[in-house]
Length: 587
Image (cartoon, rainbow, N blue to C red; front, top):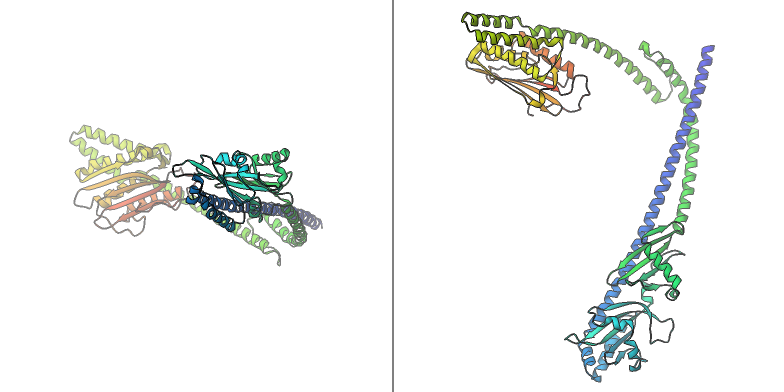
């Protein structure tokens, strides 16, 4: 009875905790998703609005620049008209009719050109405006457009101005003035072409700047060229506000919800400034916020409903898992009730696989410990080969009989060094330098025995000598080369021992020119005797230390010698392994 109460309490606590967890997780996910969607969408709306506004302003500026360039071209062509030059240079009134026809043709081809006025240096006037005569020419010569054109090789574009000869107080125009010169460059007069003020407004008609938006033009002198409200030309405070807006550059005024963008109009010296109201964007952002809020509320309601159903179905099978896992020390498998979540059943299946794997690992560890122990015993056996010791002592006796005391001493020291390096104070790991010295002493002793029949070389870079490797991994290979490769051959034998590094791999190579053989397996020796035992022992020890991707490889063929390669890792046994494929024979 008490155990049932405890189980019910656990289920109750578990159900409440899991419900709160999923509700909190769902709420956090919905909030994060909603906020992300809102800000990303709002940012896209802002960027789209700004990009569209920029494109429209740039397009309008290009249209104005194209039109002004065309007017300047027409002005320049007419100013260089030979009849016009001839008329201004002399006093031939017969040319006046043809020139007036040319003026009428220009006016007919461009409806925005309001007036064309030619003022000669002697005060004569040629124009489509009938009320102009020599009485006003002196005053016109004092105006800015006339003075700026003199000695200026290019047509001069003016800002908005009132026509001095017009009786209409609201007669605003934009002018292009061009100096007229004779072939030698002497001034003959000035050509003035007045364009209607509406020419700019018509090119800006496609812009939708909002209720509080506006667009205006400023020339390179800081003078106002265009504004829809012409009162800005006469009221200093209003003009100052526009100049302040110009100084702000491209910016977004959050307080007033206004976007300012400016672009230079080519061939004019003007700057087009657009001030766009972003009220429509604010309204879209409000609608977007309401839509995201509604969607988030619906999603949260769905999460609450699914969370309750999910928790009720999950609690009971989880109790089965909890009860089974409390007895993990027994390594017993567990089972859950039917009709539970697939994930819970999968969890129980993985748990059972883990138990089985633990059992297998425990058996493998036991087997490896036994194998390692046996390999260590084999290593100790191979350290002191009684035949090698007997043959070496026999050689020393033979040298002593011939009173060759120097070689006796040298060979005895070499034998002592060989066994000292073999024992190494009982330690299994030695430096590369000691391992090479060990095999060098062994080869020296064998060289004294075989004489000129055996030669050897050992090469190793200085930077590799401090690496640590298991001891006595080269001597069994060299011994195998001597007894099974070089000894049976008729000619002279040689052995080369080299060490190199390939990334994380340390590679020892023992190469001889002996009789060779056909390997049956990577670790096969040349015979079933001591050589095979030694090679297999080295291969097993390397695999135990460094893993299955390390060990011993043999390349040989009858009559072609033999190459044995030992692949180790540069890190010490037990250090973190390097995830890289071992080098192949061709590397």
